[in-house]
Length: 432
Ligand code: DLL
Image 1 (cartoon, rainbow, N blue to C red):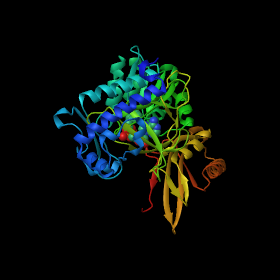
Image 2 (cartoon, rainbow, N blue to C red):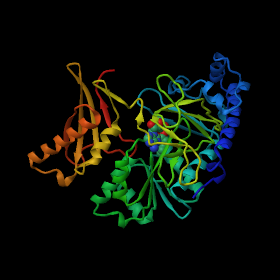
Image 3 (spheres, rainbow, N blue to C red):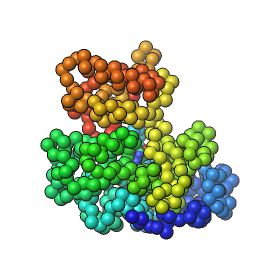
Image 4 (cartoon, helix red, strand yellow):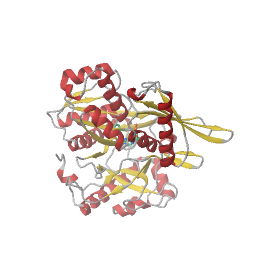
């Protein structure tokens, strides 16, 4: 089902000209309403009238998370406080949160892109959607909520956590769609099994999972546990929240709602714009937002863009699943390691669960890598020899994929902390 055929199937040249018009208007607005951007543009010698087409985007300066922090809390807002109807914030790992604001019009636009996203997963007004993303300052819960209401589905605003209640309502209300982080979906799948139920006791048919990176192996695992088709949804609070891009049923990447969020891929070191197909850092320019329009926001997420035709008929550019974030990338003994690579190795093996923790430390000036892995119940035997053999096999597979050796510690089922939101997969004890 296509929610907004006019936009989602628009001819590429027409889309580029729409983006150019919107970019022009947006630059005009921020030049006059956000002193930070006026200064930035003046420093570069750029006047709003210099921006005429989408090709002028690459001349504009970038915005970083640090710029949002430096202007905490409302310094980059382009409208007076009276026009703000909602605030969200993401906590991040250090320091002050990143604050984002929305006007009434922004909330309508956000609901529209989430409605388009849900339509990609075939969600209709006949569905019952259990929104188990956190409600609150995090954009997941309310973002999905408004979009699902726009579609006309019945929304269960249960938020994250309280697993027993999740299962009870899922069964009693007959939820057909589950929206939460992939790590919480896998935890719920596990809890269903432990409660002696299986997917045939439920009515679920689709999952809308995002807010953190997850692999194809994780998708297969969740689809098996819950008996559903699992879709990837991407977004970030600075750009809007969930609904920046979403997978269609062809699942060949996530279509970006480019009429609102203009994507680019850059080389994170040189900031040079890279062609479609190249791996690099994703940059977004949200051109229609009133409260917080950002110019070339650097997401730190690493991926590729593709503009080739999609079987679903949409012409919107697709982004691949994120490999990770450039600031998630671990450099261990000089080798670049992404947690997603570890996840792929573990999930390719039958004996391990998708619950793991990567612990990096430094001993005698040498980086150490330890991977704690939960083992499936039936393989967690008392036979020391068997466990040692498994440990060796994981070690070997990690070494051949990552190119470095790791210490593997097998741990009992259910001993690695579960999360109802974004999972924490890495502990880095090295002092920066
Ligand atoms: O996570 C918004 C969201 C909510 C997206 C619910 C999808 C579903 P933030 O808390 O600002 O916003 O975190 C944004 O999370 O830059 C990515 O690194 C990561 N992320 C979000 N979606 C995905 C995804 C929300 N599908 C940051 N795959 C982003 C990989 C994702 N990473």
